[in-house]
Image (cartoon, rainbow, N blue to C red):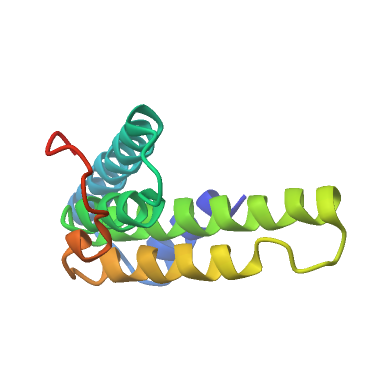
Length: 130
């Protein structure tokens, strides 16, 4: 629902031309792939205290694609954090469990999307492959 609302908003309100619209969608698709690659690398690395680095890196890579990539990174990041808040609510009740981690994740997401170096969050010893 958020995706379709965002697309309609961009098309009708912002008056995006068909050529720019196609570019926006291409950037969004590439940005989504960047986010998936960062998530896959995080799962593969399975390295302690590296999640903030991968959050920042995925958002950074996606945002470098352009406005469509930055939009995709924000939508994916927000959806992921909101979903985690809901599952934490069911698992732990209204205890605030995971709230600080979620805020730290969002800080790393915004850091990357703003174009700042994701290596700020890189833990010592993480293999160079990542």
